[in-house]
Amino acid sequence: MTKEEIENGTADMEIDQRELMNGERSELNAVPDGFNANYLKVYYGKLFPHADIFKWMSYGNDGKHPGCDESYFGRREFSFTLDNDIYLRFQSFNSVSQLENSIKEKCPFKIDIGPVYSVDPAKRHAYAQSGNNVFTPVEKELVFDIDMTDYDDVRYCCSGADVCLKCWTLMTIAIKVIDPALRDDFGFNHILWVYSGRRGVHCWVCDPKARRLTNEQRSSIAEYFRVYKGNENSQKKVSLTSSALHPFLLRSYKVLEEFFEGNLLSNQSLFSTEERYEKILEMIPDESITSELRGKWQDNKKSSISKENINVDRWKHVKKILKSGKQKGQGLGKCVEEIVFSFSYPRLDMEVSKHMNHLLKAPFCIHPKTGRVCVPIDPNHCEEFDPTAVPTLSKLLEEINMGGLGTDDDEWDRTSLGKSIRFFRSSFLQPLLKSCKEEIENSYNAKLQHSKTSLTW
Image (cartoon, rainbow, N blue to C red; front, side, top):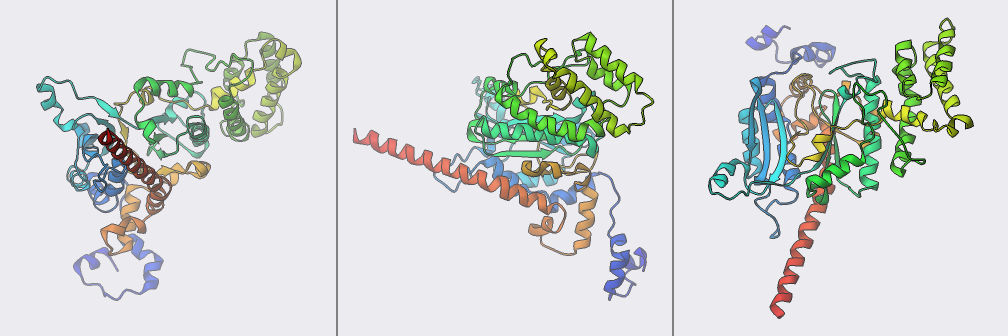
């Protein structure tokens, strides 16, 4: 049976199920790989969770409670990037239907989310003409952006935009270090981690106290996480000067050490060549030690030790000599930790976190370069996340074709995107909205009580 027969209606309508299982069905429903506007139209029409994004960005201000701020969602900035890099900033919407219709109509290649402003961002010019300088950001999630390209000096499997499971470990480490600190050190609860669609991760901290942080407070939190301070010209990119590590750094080091020794050493072959181990020797400020290690490794060039073991063995040499009592006395005891931090500690884009008006890509967008969906990541199982297995636009369309007829409401549930949307709802959105509605109720009751107290006077 050919595609032409199907299209012309000449094929027998009673198709044997065994034929479908033998591959004809998947062939007929196959969608060519790639990214284009036609694919996006289907995705936005059938799979994109418009209502979930609206509920999230409304934070319980849905008009169903007398204490709601009905203007809240309408003051949020959305930014659309269209084909040919056409940017539409300061888009705003008053309802989920407006948001959905605009996305379906404009079919943006990327959707970015900005802050909640004091007034409707789409009407900012009218307010400016009135002479009142009232257009200013008043709320925005505390966000973090971690990009794999910032690790190019310590990963050897890939570079630039390329990513594989070997270097993705660095993103796993970032989540395992930052997520517990946000919860335990700062008391945040509603945190969403999202795959960027290509080479990194984004973090959204959505608690009320996080959304209302000033730029100065955001900067302070970002600086709390800033340990890696290197650039291309600096040899020493981490400096741990105090005699004892801060409790946060001590907890972090346990994570870093586990992945550095159990994964990165061998997978990135950090000591396998002279060029690579020289990078590490440059971090040791004692020439006698570096000369000793260098001489030992150069003498062992023709050793029968496997490439995997040579990385582990050479790291053991470094640790042994730096952790000896003599070297500790010379102030070299922290060198081991500094090396581990330099190669594995999270490297944040500080400017993204510091400023309230910074835009960040919305979850469930499609990355135009890879065609992959920006899906949420479970921080409790982040080591299981595989960026190469994330659903692509073409795969999702194929799954829609394979699934046959269905309602638009449940279309996503019959595709590989279903697991991600269910996780977003159950683990993030539902607990967040429950908390937001409780806050709205408590605030409303407090105002009523205050009003009653005022009347009695």
